[in-house]
Amino acid sequence: MNVGLAWASVERIETCNSFWMLDPALMQFCRMPKGVDVSDAVSASWQRYYVWHDDPDTGAFRIALDEAHTRWLSSSRHLHPCPRCEQEPTREVVMPPPPCAVAGDLLK
Image (cartoon, rainbow, N blue to C red):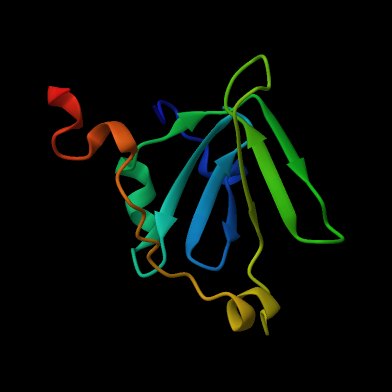
């Protein structure tokens, strides 16, 4: 999306595993993994959001992805030192395939 990105209004939020870039003037955001140059945000995939909620007491925030406010993304700001990183480091979660995707199920 990012047509007419207004850098002066872009807010950069650091979470435990990424950076969120929010442009409240255009109601757009993108997420960039840590370790990526945030200047790459210009060419990143920006998405529209409809509502932004920020809780300054806890560091939690969330954005509505649709006008009906039925789809949300949420995260928390990274702190220094960060109790979340110390307790629950970001890691890969391996999940079993859904039952319908198990080999042979499609042939029944």
